Length: 543
Ligand code: GLN
Image 1 (cartoon, rainbow, N blue to C red):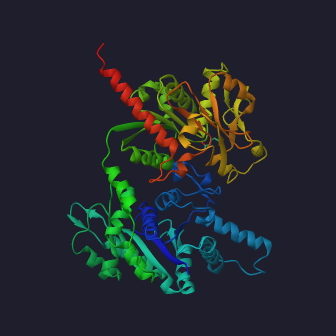
Image 2 (image 1 turned 180 degrees about the horizontal axis):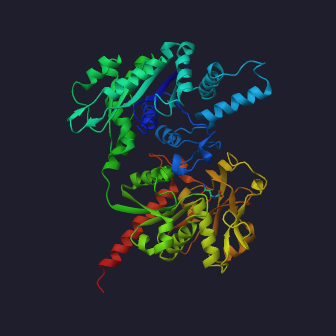
Image 3 (image 1 turned 135 degrees about the vertical axis):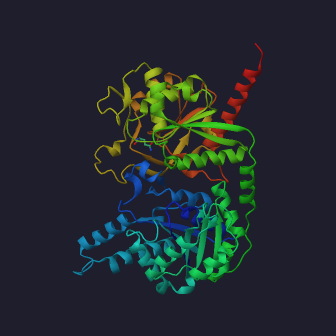
């Protein structure tokens, strides 16, 4: 029988519920329990695919092509388990399903209401994960904060769930904030008391409290919390800020979280194997040389917009023992001041994915700079498309070349719509999404990095390389080192007359893991390290 752990949040948003859920996943997995993690998001968008990254951060893409909340990325990275579209549920998707049923007449004339129709649909989605994947434990994170109007149907559904699956088969975990008040020199439990009261008024008594705090919990706070919130003192788990999110499983293990969860769920206690994870954190905290990588994008004001790219870089840096620093560069600043002003000192450059024309010229300028100054470069999705425009304008003499995304009637549309996209009008969920195979060119940099002849990567785009320009592209020094298996779609390009210059139509960042860094990111970092060493050697040679 699958067991269920519900994770709610109190007091404030952005409290780290996703990291807590993912960390518990890791702790259970390290005890040989299979885990799946589900996110219930209270917004009315059917999925975050159409939301601005400024609003919602990165859109994470699963193997099966779902556009999801970025927390699914944490779940995958922490548990090293691929999630699917079943793992992401929004209010919008629940209502869409219920309204579709209503239109089909499935409710046989009944009045369709939040309770029971919406709450039933929510429960069906939770059970579907249990049924489809049959894991030992499903962890369900409820987005938002207890007290929000939006999350009420979710909380009502998980309350009802208790009687349906049995008290012994589920627990409620509440992640809350214990603020430090400098003027009083004290930590305060009142916000937690209030949020637990709010939860209880809905009918949910938490079994475990996770107390987020910016320093170790003061003595007596646990007991106070236990007394006021009716949670046994050993189930009041401190979660102080960590230097890295990857340390959180280790901290929570030390506080006995997994032990308490297993006890409450009547599951056998097993010793955890966290050796690999522990050594990963040690390497992260004992970095060697500083490596500065530039990310040139449009959404740099909100770093979460590129979360998986940052994490993939971090995984590569852990493997190399490098002290990673990210230099965030707004590509519009490059348009105003030139690329050299921002990129001269960096060891490597990434131009990540994106949509819309704003800042594209700055990205193209950054790519030209990386190519000409021989700085290691990795282009991702739109980053690859910008490489092709840069090539066309500066190496192929097609000055008016553009992507059809930005100039519908371009005379040289070197990037154009995928054929299957021609007649699509809806924006949501209609891109080329999810995992696709890619055939690698023997002898290429891509082959050296991946060490495979066929790879699988996740996609999220509407546009592609225009094959009318293929031969010209190859004649002018570029290489096409990855294509779809039928050879039709260009997936990887590289510029061989350069120490490291590669760009991909997919999003490799989604498949990187802290313990299994992605070869493209690790390759970029290795090349960046070499670039830095070479530059330092040149500087130290007396004239
Ligand atoms: N806007 C481009 C396209 O739709 C690239 C998308 C992306 O970078 N994810 O093809």
